[in-house]
Length: 184
Image: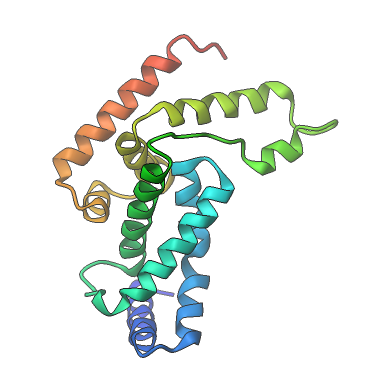
């Protein structure tokens, strides 16, 4: 689907969603859930937490769908809500950030699966991401894992572009410092 066709389709889904059409809301979930889960998982490191945040994101989005003004893409708006839900989860957990192994990697780690060293390397990177502040982690995940532009991140997080660039630079600098002693 081309960009304008997709925009028109989403505009129509939003109109129907505002009217309470359950099929439209279901289509919005189907079209964005996987992407939102990947983003949440990248920020949280735990599948269960990511699922919870995605559910809360859709609940908040559907409550406020009438306020969606179309100033951004629907996905950008949803990611903004997701980021706020991640922040709420962090506050509820009193700022504790825990990092779990991806279940897919856990399943592969058995006999005949992924070698222990590869799993350890994935865990090391996940732990390093988990050591970043929530602000640094979210911009790093949105930029490096989700491929968002600086402008999209700034819009999603409601921050000036310079703040996004600064946080991203600091996050990368911290990771480089931690990785400098890491041998391959």
